[in-house]
Length: 59
View 1 (cartoon, rainbow, N blue to C red):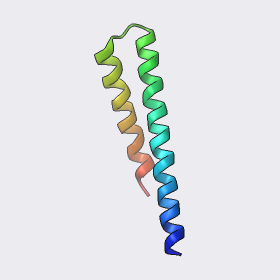
View 2 (cartoon, rainbow, N blue to C red):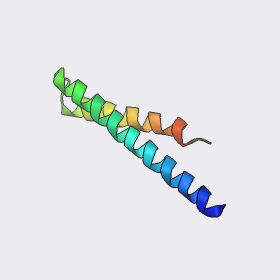
View 3 (cartoon, helix red, strand yellow):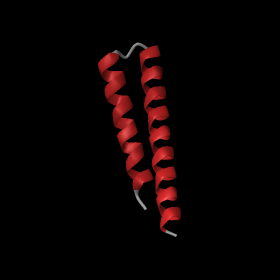
């Protein structure tokens, strides 16, 4: 039972991490493609990633 809970938590951690990485990268890439500049693209990408991860981490 305890191993199953640890496996589920680990799987959830990996899925959330991958989705945040993908979302952040896509946002940064799109903003750079439309010439928003490095600072705005990275700031917005990381902000969206952080805001996305919060509801996914909640039980």
